[in-house]
Each structure stands twice: as C-alpha cells, then as structure tokens.
Length: 306
Image (cartoon, rainbow, N blue to C red):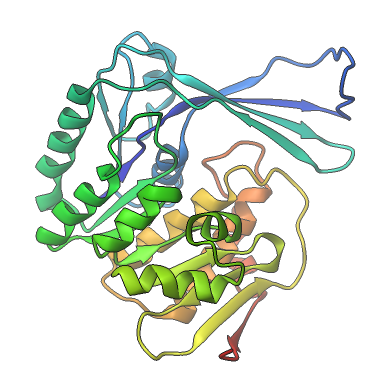
C-alpha cells in the first residue's frame, strides 16, 4: 500500500475556453469539478495504474461531493470544521496556456492535525511508501511533514515529500528518502538559484535523493552519494493542461520506491513519461495511456559536475 497525505485538499475547478481576456466577461461551459489537492491527485494516478493507494486528508463531513468523487480511490478523511478551499484552473485551448488560482485554505484546529497523525501512523505497518504532498494551510505546524516522515522511517517505510518552504526544510531534516521540489520551489526554499546547489543544501540537512522538476526541460535526479547527477527530458514539448504533471511524477516516484528499488535512470524515465502523459489529460489525477510509448522517447544524460 502507498499512503498519500494531502494537508491542504481542494475542490478542483477546471474551466476551458478559447481565450481568456483580462477584464472581459466570458460565457463558458460548466466547470469540471474534482476532488483535488496534490496528494489526492497522486493517489488517483496510482490507483488508475493498478497500485494499491489510500488518500488521507482533512475534509469536512459536509463536503459530500469530495468523497463521492473519490469513489474509485480508497480514502480516509479526517473531519474539520472548515469548508474546502477551491483551486481553479483556466485552460485556454487557443494557446495551451493554463492559469491557476489557488486559495490558501483555512487554519485547522490542532485536533485535526493530531487525528491526521494518528490515522497515518495506524496504516504505516501495512505501507510500502508514504507521500506527503502539497501546501499546508496557514498556521499548520511547521513540523507536520517532518513528523509524518519520521514515523514512516521508524516503521521502515519509504518516504517522499513534495513540499516547499519550511515544510521542505523540515522534511529534509527528518531524513526523507526522496524530495521532489520544482525548480522555483527549490530556489525559494534554499535561496540557491542553481538546482544542484539547492539540492545539495537539502542533502546537507539530511535528505536523500532530490528530484527536481524543470518544467519543459525535464527533471534532474541528484543522489545523496557520489553517483552521477542525471538529467532526463522528453524529446518534444507536449501541449495540454500541465496542472497535474508534477503529481503524476510523484505517483511514479512512489510506485518506484514501493518496489524497493532506487535505480535512478528507471526512476527518472518513468517520472518524466508519467508527467508528460498527465499534460495530455483534461483534468489532474489521470495520465494518458501513451505513457509507455513516451518513456521510450525520454533522453537521459549525465550532468557535468560544476
């Protein structure tokens, strides 16, 4: 089983139109609504690909649409007094540009985080990998991600964190086996403008392998030992909705770690392919069936050490 934790879930709303004109009024088709948040998207992709995954998140019992949408994804929802935040993606078909508006979410009572911790730890004995993914709402404990990572390590479970800021720093200090920031998150968190330097800064704190998303430029894998730094990218740029691309990559990384292996080239090739396949789908949380073909078109090379 792979556990995904989403500290800040959302109701995803995707609006598709030909072109967005700022300041204008647009008549559009009804928005596509979906239970979302990064960890939820990860779990959905994993289940779609035949993996046994469970999504854990704080969601009010009144949010029936959220749980109903997860009918095909095993889940455990921790009660909260607050309504879900919204994440709105505006997809322009004429240009392929997607604009995303993410609400920050509401501060949660401490009891919510205590219950979330207890639900996760109760499942760890049966888990092969723990993924803590996405933002945290305001006033969330700074050590939230780190404490879950530490519990998983104590249980002998592989760990991945896809976070930013203090949550990413604390996950590194907790010894996360793999961290997956994107280039901007890594720069904003470490202050390093060069991805390898940012990855090394996290590894000095205690993190294992760092996989850095570079957008259209692919991904970097920076091992924590003296192994070569590897760069992978698809041989072409795909047009579509990139909203769930990073989550699909994390799903691939989790599936790889759950297999008990860390072959960097295999890890990178599949992560880039799944990420690209997600761009071809209209909604986050799914990947196109062509991901195996895309994997064959991924080029992997060694990055020369600076």
